[in-house]
Length: 116
Image (cartoon, helix red, strand yellow):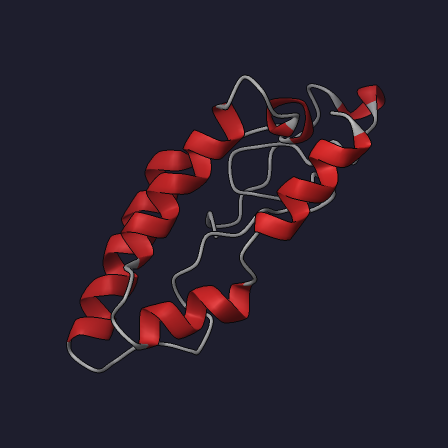
């Protein structure tokens, strides 16, 4: 991506605080935010597909639905509950090996911890 395009993309990015405010005000839902994230990752014009080692879209949707259900009954877990996040490949996710950018770890033991 050219430097100018990167600057434009950064300027158009929404912060987690802005997402949280939209959720709290009812202007958005966790599911809507989560549905938009994989679309951005898969966009052919961007570099996101090179950046993300894996996308857990189904699990993210399930967590987003749960977040929306809790928020609907006034039981949101925190101010930042709902917006999708990315996790660096240095951290274990249940069922996957944390590669930490190293090919040496390919095929290593997968984390047994519950998927976040």
